Length: 253
Image 1 (cartoon, one colour):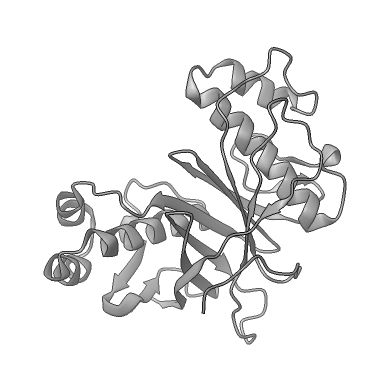
Image 2 (spheres, rainbow, N blue to C red):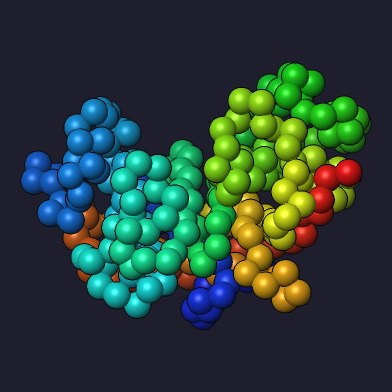
Protein backbone atom coordinates (compact mmCIF):
# COMPACT_ATOMS: atom_id res chain seq x y z
CA UNK A 1 0.00 0.00 0.00
CA UNK A 2 1.28 3.48 -0.75
CA UNK A 3 2.41 5.37 2.31
CA UNK A 4 1.99 8.87 3.58
CA UNK A 5 3.97 10.80 6.17
CA UNK A 6 3.71 8.77 9.37
CA UNK A 7 3.38 9.54 13.05
CA UNK A 8 6.58 9.69 15.04
CA UNK A 9 7.82 6.41 16.54
CA UNK A 10 11.18 6.53 18.37
CA UNK A 11 11.92 2.85 17.66
CA UNK A 12 11.43 3.12 13.90
CA UNK A 13 13.96 4.81 11.56
CA UNK A 14 12.80 8.01 9.94
CA UNK A 15 13.60 9.39 6.50
CA UNK A 16 13.43 13.15 6.02
CA UNK A 17 13.59 14.64 2.52
CA UNK A 18 13.76 18.12 1.06
CA UNK A 19 14.51 19.68 -2.29
CA UNK A 20 17.64 21.80 -2.30
CA UNK A 21 17.82 25.50 -3.00
CA UNK A 22 20.86 26.90 -4.78
CA UNK A 23 21.15 30.30 -3.09
CA UNK A 24 23.75 30.95 -0.40
CA UNK A 25 23.16 34.08 1.71
CA UNK A 26 25.94 36.65 2.11
CA UNK A 27 25.61 36.25 5.86
CA UNK A 28 25.98 32.56 6.64
CA UNK A 29 23.51 30.97 9.08
CA UNK A 30 24.58 31.49 12.69
CA UNK A 31 23.84 27.87 13.53
CA UNK A 32 26.68 26.40 11.46
CA UNK A 33 29.44 24.84 13.58
CA UNK A 34 33.07 25.86 13.11
CA UNK A 35 33.71 22.57 11.29
CA UNK A 36 30.78 23.18 8.93
CA UNK A 37 31.94 26.74 8.20
CA UNK A 38 35.41 25.48 7.34
CA UNK A 39 33.96 22.78 5.10
CA UNK A 40 31.64 25.22 3.32
CA UNK A 41 34.55 27.59 2.66
CA UNK A 42 36.25 24.86 0.61
CA UNK A 43 33.23 24.37 -1.66
CA UNK A 44 32.14 26.36 -4.69
CA UNK A 45 29.25 26.53 -7.14
CA UNK A 46 26.14 24.40 -6.60
CA UNK A 47 27.90 22.34 -3.94
CA UNK A 48 27.56 25.22 -1.49
CA UNK A 49 23.77 25.26 -1.70
CA UNK A 50 23.72 21.47 -1.54
CA UNK A 51 25.82 21.51 1.61
CA UNK A 52 23.78 24.19 3.37
CA UNK A 53 20.51 22.48 2.44
CA UNK A 54 21.73 19.16 3.83
CA UNK A 55 22.84 20.71 7.13
CA UNK A 56 19.52 22.51 7.43
CA UNK A 57 17.70 19.21 6.83
CA UNK A 58 19.82 17.40 9.45
CA UNK A 59 18.75 19.93 12.08
CA UNK A 60 15.10 19.76 11.06
CA UNK A 61 15.15 15.97 11.30
CA UNK A 62 16.97 15.89 14.64
CA UNK A 63 14.61 18.50 16.05
CA UNK A 64 11.55 16.47 15.13
CA UNK A 65 13.13 13.17 16.20
CA UNK A 66 14.42 14.41 19.56
CA UNK A 67 11.66 16.94 20.24
CA UNK A 68 14.16 19.74 20.85
CA UNK A 69 14.59 23.13 19.14
CA UNK A 70 16.42 22.90 15.82
CA UNK A 71 18.87 25.61 16.92
CA UNK A 72 20.24 23.21 19.53
CA UNK A 73 20.75 20.31 17.11
CA UNK A 74 23.98 19.50 15.32
CA UNK A 75 25.85 16.42 14.05
CA UNK A 76 29.29 15.16 15.00
CA UNK A 77 32.17 16.71 13.07
CA UNK A 78 33.29 14.93 9.93
CA UNK A 79 30.94 12.60 8.17
CA UNK A 80 27.50 13.13 9.79
CA UNK A 81 26.93 9.61 11.08
CA UNK A 82 25.55 10.56 14.52
CA UNK A 83 24.15 13.51 16.43
CA UNK A 84 26.30 15.50 18.82
CA UNK A 85 23.07 16.90 20.24
CA UNK A 86 20.58 15.54 21.00
CA UNK A 87 22.69 12.52 21.95
CA UNK A 88 21.81 8.97 21.02
CA UNK A 89 20.76 9.33 17.38
CA UNK A 90 22.44 7.62 14.44
CA UNK A 91 22.08 9.23 11.04
CA UNK A 92 23.01 8.93 7.39
CA UNK A 93 22.95 11.53 4.62
CA UNK A 94 22.46 11.25 0.87
CA UNK A 95 21.81 13.72 -1.93
CA UNK A 96 21.30 13.46 -5.67
CA UNK A 97 20.14 15.84 -8.39
CA UNK A 98 18.50 18.38 -6.12
CA UNK A 99 17.08 16.07 -3.46
CA UNK A 100 18.49 15.73 0.06
CA UNK A 101 17.72 12.80 2.34
CA UNK A 102 18.69 12.14 5.94
CA UNK A 103 17.82 8.97 7.83
CA UNK A 104 17.69 9.13 11.63
CA UNK A 105 17.20 6.29 14.09
CA UNK A 106 18.30 4.74 17.39
CA UNK A 107 20.64 2.21 15.72
CA UNK A 108 23.30 2.32 12.96
CA UNK A 109 21.81 2.93 9.51
CA UNK A 110 22.59 4.05 5.99
CA UNK A 111 20.58 5.67 3.21
CA UNK A 112 21.09 6.25 -0.51
CA UNK A 113 18.89 8.05 -3.03
CA UNK A 114 19.09 7.96 -6.83
CA UNK A 115 16.79 9.25 -9.58
CA UNK A 116 14.67 6.32 -10.71
CA UNK A 117 15.17 7.16 -14.40
CA UNK A 118 18.95 7.20 -14.21
CA UNK A 119 20.49 4.87 -16.82
CA UNK A 120 24.23 4.46 -16.18
CA UNK A 121 26.53 1.94 -17.89
CA UNK A 122 25.22 -0.54 -15.39
CA UNK A 123 26.24 -3.72 -17.24
CA UNK A 124 29.90 -2.70 -17.07
CA UNK A 125 29.64 -1.91 -13.36
CA UNK A 126 27.91 -5.21 -12.62
CA UNK A 127 30.47 -7.25 -14.55
CA UNK A 128 33.39 -5.58 -12.80
CA UNK A 129 32.19 -5.22 -9.21
CA UNK A 130 29.26 -7.56 -8.54
CA UNK A 131 29.31 -11.22 -7.58
CA UNK A 132 28.70 -13.95 -10.22
CA UNK A 133 25.28 -14.63 -8.68
CA UNK A 134 24.30 -10.95 -8.97
CA UNK A 135 25.63 -10.68 -12.51
CA UNK A 136 23.68 -13.74 -13.65
CA UNK A 137 20.21 -12.54 -12.66
CA UNK A 138 20.77 -8.84 -13.35
CA UNK A 139 22.14 -9.36 -16.85
CA UNK A 140 19.41 -11.86 -17.64
CA UNK A 141 16.70 -9.42 -16.50
CA UNK A 142 18.40 -6.61 -18.47
CA UNK A 143 16.58 -3.96 -16.42
CA UNK A 144 18.45 -0.79 -15.33
CA UNK A 145 15.78 -0.21 -12.67
CA UNK A 146 16.76 -3.46 -10.97
CA UNK A 147 20.39 -2.40 -11.10
CA UNK A 148 19.57 0.92 -9.41
CA UNK A 149 17.76 -0.91 -6.62
CA UNK A 150 20.81 -3.11 -6.09
CA UNK A 151 23.25 -0.20 -6.29
CA UNK A 152 21.39 1.99 -3.79
CA UNK A 153 21.10 -1.03 -1.50
CA UNK A 154 24.84 -1.67 -1.58
CA UNK A 155 25.58 2.02 -1.01
CA UNK A 156 23.22 2.13 1.98
CA UNK A 157 24.75 -1.09 3.36
CA UNK A 158 28.29 0.29 3.20
CA UNK A 159 27.19 3.49 4.93
CA UNK A 160 25.40 1.54 7.66
CA UNK A 161 28.42 -0.71 8.26
CA UNK A 162 30.85 2.25 8.08
CA UNK A 163 32.84 1.05 5.07
CA UNK A 164 33.93 2.50 1.75
CA UNK A 165 33.19 1.11 -1.71
CA UNK A 166 36.71 -0.16 -2.45
CA UNK A 167 36.82 -3.90 -1.90
CA UNK A 168 33.49 -4.02 -0.08
CA UNK A 169 30.72 -4.12 -2.69
CA UNK A 170 30.47 -7.91 -2.40
CA UNK A 171 30.10 -7.92 1.39
CA UNK A 172 26.37 -7.81 0.65
CA UNK A 173 25.07 -10.21 -2.00
CA UNK A 174 21.72 -9.44 -3.62
CA UNK A 175 20.11 -12.52 -5.08
CA UNK A 176 17.06 -12.83 -7.31
CA UNK A 177 13.85 -11.42 -5.79
CA UNK A 178 16.06 -9.41 -3.41
CA UNK A 179 17.06 -12.23 -1.12
CA UNK A 180 19.88 -10.59 0.83
CA UNK A 181 23.02 -12.01 2.43
CA UNK A 182 25.59 -9.93 4.33
CA UNK A 183 28.85 -10.53 6.17
CA UNK A 184 27.62 -9.34 9.59
CA UNK A 185 26.37 -12.58 11.24
CA UNK A 186 26.55 -11.11 14.74
CA UNK A 187 24.05 -8.36 13.93
CA UNK A 188 20.47 -8.26 12.66
CA UNK A 189 20.04 -5.93 9.67
CA UNK A 190 16.98 -4.93 7.66
CA UNK A 191 16.64 -3.14 4.35
CA UNK A 192 13.78 -1.40 2.61
CA UNK A 193 13.34 0.56 -0.59
CA UNK A 194 10.63 2.96 -1.69
CA UNK A 195 9.82 5.18 -4.63
CA UNK A 196 9.24 8.83 -3.73
CA UNK A 197 9.40 12.09 -5.68
CA UNK A 198 10.84 10.33 -8.73
CA UNK A 199 13.67 8.80 -6.69
CA UNK A 200 14.59 5.46 -5.21
CA UNK A 201 15.29 5.79 -1.50
CA UNK A 202 16.95 2.75 0.06
CA UNK A 203 17.56 2.32 3.78
CA UNK A 204 19.61 -0.26 5.69
CA UNK A 205 19.29 -0.30 9.47
CA UNK A 206 20.24 -2.46 12.42
CA UNK A 207 17.41 -4.04 14.38
CA UNK A 208 16.98 -2.79 17.94
CA UNK A 209 15.31 -6.04 18.94
CA UNK A 210 16.12 -9.01 16.64
CA UNK A 211 12.86 -10.69 17.71
CA UNK A 212 10.68 -7.71 16.86
CA UNK A 213 8.96 -7.55 13.50
CA UNK A 214 10.55 -4.92 11.29
CA UNK A 215 8.43 -1.88 10.45
CA UNK A 216 8.56 0.50 7.54
CA UNK A 217 10.35 3.75 8.32
CA UNK A 218 8.51 7.03 8.35
CA UNK A 219 9.04 9.00 5.13
CA UNK A 220 8.45 12.76 5.24
CA UNK A 221 9.07 15.38 2.57
CA UNK A 222 9.62 18.81 4.10
CA UNK A 223 9.20 22.15 2.40
CA UNK A 224 12.52 23.44 0.97
CA UNK A 225 14.77 25.62 3.12
CA UNK A 226 13.99 29.35 3.13
CA UNK A 227 16.53 31.57 1.36
CA UNK A 228 18.15 32.59 4.65
CA UNK A 229 18.13 28.98 5.94
CA UNK A 230 16.43 29.95 9.19
CA UNK A 231 15.49 27.03 11.40
CA UNK A 232 11.81 27.74 11.91
CA UNK A 233 10.03 24.36 11.96
CA UNK A 234 9.60 23.18 8.38
CA UNK A 235 6.16 22.05 7.34
CA UNK A 236 5.69 18.58 5.81
CA UNK A 237 4.44 18.50 2.24
CA UNK A 238 1.77 16.07 1.14
CA UNK A 239 3.53 13.26 -0.66
CA UNK A 240 2.80 9.62 -1.38
CA UNK A 241 5.56 7.04 -1.48
CA UNK A 242 5.38 3.54 -2.87
CA UNK A 243 7.04 0.68 -0.95
CA UNK A 244 9.11 -1.60 -3.21
CA UNK A 245 10.57 -4.18 -0.82
CA UNK A 246 11.38 -4.80 2.83
CA UNK A 247 13.88 -7.59 3.63
CA UNK A 248 15.94 -9.03 6.45
CA UNK A 249 19.64 -9.35 5.58
CA UNK A 250 20.67 -12.91 6.41
CA UNK A 251 24.13 -14.17 7.34
CA UNK A 252 26.20 -14.87 4.23
CA UNK A 253 26.85 -18.53 3.55
